[in-house]
Each structure stands twice: as structure tokens, then as C-alpha cells.
Amino acid sequence: MRGTRKAGLALTAVAALTLAACSGGEPGTSDDEPAGGDSATEGGGSGEGLTIGIKFDQPGLGLQEGSEYTGFDVDVAKYVAEKLGYAEEDIEFVESVSSQRETLLENGSVDMIFATYSITDERKERVAFAGPYFVAGQDLLVATDNSDITGPDTLDGKVLCSVEGSTSAERIRDEHSEGVELYPAQTYSECVELLSAGTVDAVTTDDVILAGYAAQDEYEGQFKVVGNPFSEENYGVGLPQDNDVCEDVNAAITEMIDDGTWEELIAKNVGDNFSWNEELNPPEPQPCA
Ligand code: GLU
Image (tube, rainbow, N blue to C red; front, side):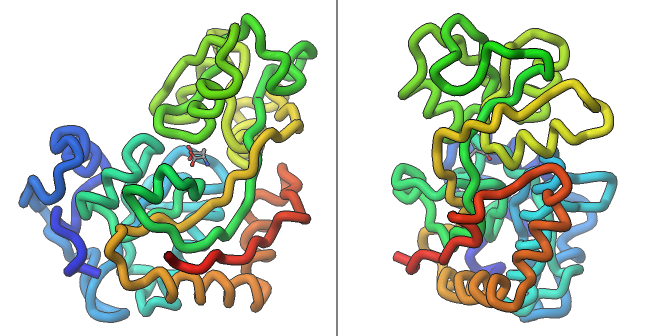
């Protein structure tokens, strides 16, 4: 995959984000290679490494704890990477917050993204998608004792936190903006802290993400997911537009569903706290454009 990437293989998450922020989306503006080089990306598989963008702060989906990465997105990424010929040690995980995903793909900081990343026509103007491999729905997280927020039509006068660059924030701005104050954060964990402090009335994003926060020990008993989803979020694998792997990624996703791994991975990662929509899941990958 190295040939498709221009910005240095071993960028740390911070460096990648700084680069993205500083470059204003211009590809390949830095040759910086942090100390340590790209040893993590050498050997095995096709002989090169694979840099994968994930979330670092979404329990059950993409979570970094020390040097460990866990969650459904991480497991799907590892499965797909293996089918593409990469061993686990060939993978470098890089944080990809919602607002940076297109830029990270465009400037070559990551080869692919598995980060609760909804396939949308607007995003397809800048990046390509394989998948989907999961369908979620936008929902609301509120304090357990909150009884007046029951869905998107009950938000009048409320302060809502969501994340910049997400479909969740965009939908609130486009469809539910009247009387709603949107607090834009960089990450959902930031939103959840604000909800815990009582600074906002609700957090809005995909139900599967919210369920992961509600189930965290540190927030035990504090929050509930409203359970009235008001969108369909098709999670795709983000790829650069000029990729040659989309078909192979789709084949891997199909195999993962057919061989029973999909079911195993979703149950293992989110099954204790969340019931996914069985009519919509597992989805069928769409043809690559
Ligand atoms: N799936 C939605 C999106 O891609 C919300 C979750 C997220 O921000 O990762 O924007």
C-alpha cells in the first residue's frame, strides 16, 4: 500500500492530525518521519505495512488502551487486512477523528479507514468506500432520569453535543436546527463528559456508539440511549478515490459475513449492551464505483 501514501508511514496520530490540520488538505506536504522510522509497517503480508484509521475513544468500536486497540471496527479491519495479505503486526492504527477522515485519506496519511464512517454522496466526492459492513441509526444519549427527550422532535430549547464533521451534527443542523443549540465537539467522549457534567442535555450520534458509552463502568447508571433511531448510517471502509483495493475489501467483507465471523465479532464487541437492527444487518456490500 506504500505507493499510494505520500506522507510518511509511521506518522503518530498527533502528527497525522497536525499534518492534516496544517496542510489544509493539501496532499504530501510533509516528509517528516518520526524517530523509529516505519519498522512497524515492515515485513509479512505483501512485504509492506498498512496504515488504518480508526477511532481511539469509542468503546466497543474503536478504542485505544495503551498499545491495545479493541472494538468491532478494529476487528473488522484486522479481518480485512488479513484477507488482503497483511499480518496483524503489519498494521499501524492511526486516530481518525470524524472531521479529519476525508483529509487523512486524501493526503495519504492512512490507507483505509474503519471508523464508524457513514457512506454518503457528499463524502464520495472526496473519498471512496467499500462496504457497508454495518448499519446503525442516529439516536440520543440522555441522563437516566431525563423523561422529556424522547426523540428528534422533543429537542426544542435543548443543548445537544455532537461531533464536527459527522453526519450526526449535520443532520441536526439541516433538519432539527430550530430551537436546538448544537455544541460541536471534536470527539464523542468529549460530548459524553459534557453530558455527565450537565453542560449539555443530550449527545447525538449513532446508537451503537452511544450504547458503548452508556455501558462504561465510569458512567454506570448515569445515561440511557433513547432508542428512537432517526437515520440509517451505513458504515463503509473509507478508501482514497484512486484505490485498487475496493473490490478486494468488499470480497473480504462478504466472506466475513458468510463464514460467521461478522456475527461473532459484533456479538463480542457490542452484544452485551446493544441490539443491532437485524432487518438491516448484516448489510450487503455495494458495488465499488
Ligand atoms: N456515522 C456517522 C458519521 O460517519 C457518525 C459517527 C462518526 O462521527 O463517526 O459521521
